[in-house]
Length: 96
Image (cartoon, rainbow, N blue to C red; front, side, top):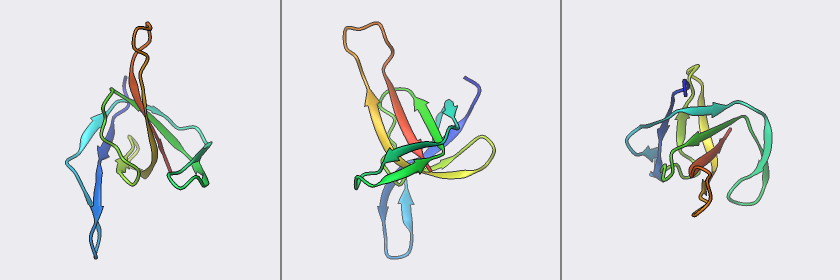
């Protein structure tokens, strides 16, 4: 996987600015425009989707740096597992 996406996990917001955890790298990126639901249930547009190893810590609000240098914000994260089935486990992140 050639793409390199830097993920800075959202921790909290102080009075002045949001706080992020240490950066980690994810390696699969799909830049397709999709309609997804955010954590409040509102329909929003996702312009980038990242597929990473299982267990990636990327809560909504996390800061992402895409391979072209563009900054994005995580909208939603889903952990995909299928115990006993011959498919890989992964973490999917939708970002705007």
